[in-house]
Length: 261
Ligand code: COA
Image 1 (cartoon, rainbow, N blue to C red):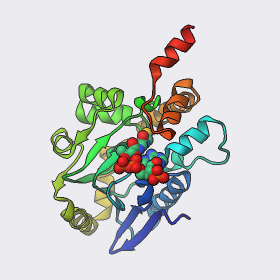
Image 2: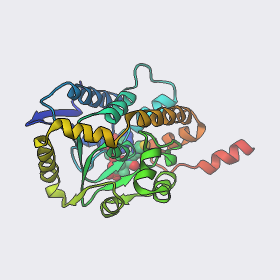
Image 3: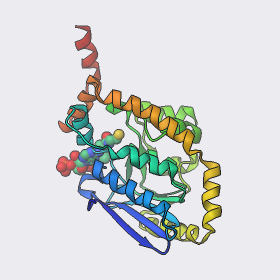
Image 4: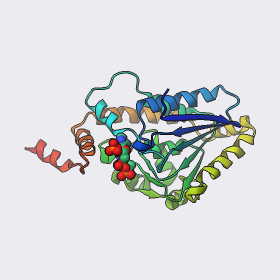
């Protein structure tokens, strides 16, 4: 349990709120664990017909906690990594998932949207996937889902250059269903979730299963995870995390010069 994930269950809608606003809802191992447990528990709870994902404060989430990345890279982390359970629960969930996104959605904050079935963006939403800038690789099957959704050209630019995508582009490219003014975000996402909750749950989940193949997604997640774990241990990644902690831009060219010397 963590106070950074708030869980509310009302009228068939399980609302999961990332609630660590002082750290821009950066996701810790504990938070992934709580999200995974809640999504898994929903599978066997007939009263939960829809899952609604949202973030507290001025942004959806700044993605994985970079301090935890650094700790893993330094070999200082032991015990279960709940991010894998979270991604698996998300990819396999039979419940329709609605996301309400304001401000930034960084890294997994954007890639988790590809597993959501209805995405509502506030007009200030900004989606970024700066994995490569952190010397990492895309995860959550996004290396498959993103090019499928928006085409290779746009997806590669998002991943390799960390190019930000604003709400209007995300809508035009098919990442999102709706863009609404920020003050209407919760009402719009809540209304869509309520509409979905009134639909026949069996038909909704079977439709979702026909449209998404969890086996394909899990194979991609596994391939990505192996590369991700290897990249975390590189000197490139160490430079990226140190730069974040020191609040300076990383210098990857310096590394090339050092290894050439
Ligand atoms: N991991 C850990 N802490 C984070 C974080 C993250 N991903 N994102 C933000 N924070 C923390 C900051 O360190 C800061 O903590 P402090 O107040 O103790 O110094 C606090 O949250 C506020 O962040 P700040 O950077 O001041 O907010 P901002 O509005 O100026 O910028 C972001 C927001 C998201 C643009 C910026 O924080 C950022 O780039 N974060 C890293 C995103 C990232 O690379 N995620 C991993 C993707 S794979």
